Length: 66
Ligand SMILES: [Zn+2]
Image (cartoon, rainbow, N blue to C red):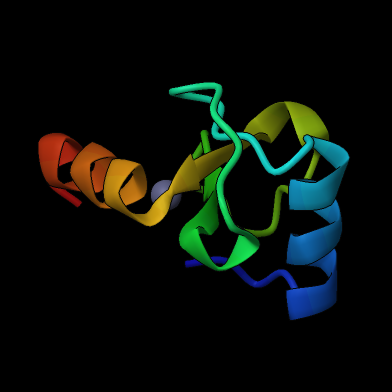
C-alpha cells in the first residue's frame, strides 16, 4: 500500500526501467508495486522506495509479519 498517485507510482517504476529491485528483471508495470523501506507511506524519498513484484512484496510483508 502507498499514498502515491497511480501516475507517481508509474513514473517511479518507469524511472527504474520497470525492474524489480529484488530479482533485477523487467516486469509489466501492472505486476510491480512500490515498497516503503521505513514503512512510512508519506516518505517518498527515492532512497526509501523499492520496486518489487506483487509476489515479492507480499512475501516480504508475510515474512515481516505485517
Ligand atoms: Zn511494502
